[in-house]
Image (cartoon, rainbow, N blue to C red; front, side, top):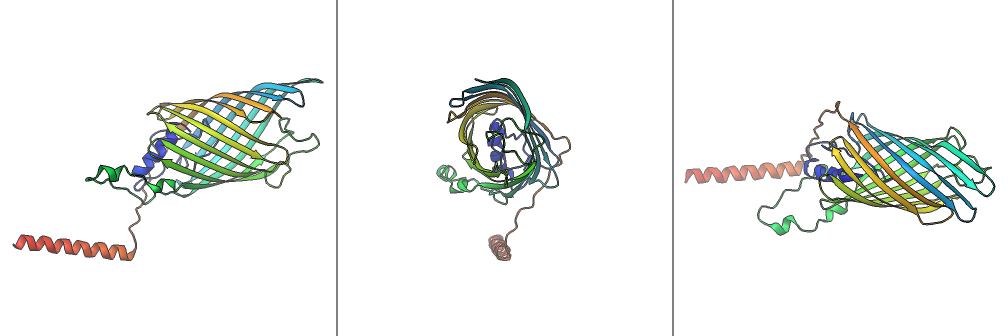
Length: 322
């Protein structure tokens, strides 16, 4: 997430007509849970990880659990500037206490392999030239900012063992493999705000299938600091909930950022609280700048441009003769 989520759009706004998706600063999805529409760039490898404390308390079932979560996301831009492969892992370890038992739980809670592709960039082949004669024209409200960049994602959930952290009855088992698809939209409002929307269908054709969403609003405060607010919703047969998160990120340098966040859900069956710290690092030594050809226009555009150049040359010749 961080300031780079703001900066990526600012840079793309100015340079996208000439260059590809690569930005000077690291472009991380953290500390929020949403996924951006843009990729990290061809040949870029990026690591995003976090350590989180989690408390779980179920009012009606009379149990509580305290422990930690480790997130590990590996992003790799490959083949095209718009394409990114992603491996997401999440490990949880906690101590569960109830009226009848007390036990330690640990498992690889999530293993997800997928790919994301940017299918539409509103700033590609678009260049807004400043009006040298009107301050008002340069600062007017721009409807174009409501046109989002759009990406699509497809992945596979892998389940290698029984997951003790799901909320279904014990006799309901997770399938070994289940697909996930997602639509991603990303808007840039002004020079400081970015709004990201993820709509997903997760664990398709399994007992744990759910339709979920994440909406994230990020604001860049300066060149180093940014903050975000986020809402994530789940809607499935065995678990439906809403979670709110807030947090901030700090850019250490062009390749590294640190972040912190807290989150709380809206129900008490169970009640969840999460607080974490994270780190993102980018390896870009193999990156080679990719030039993107500008759209030269239709045949009619070229014809009109050629006619205008001839008229301009004719007027210039007439002035020189006089």
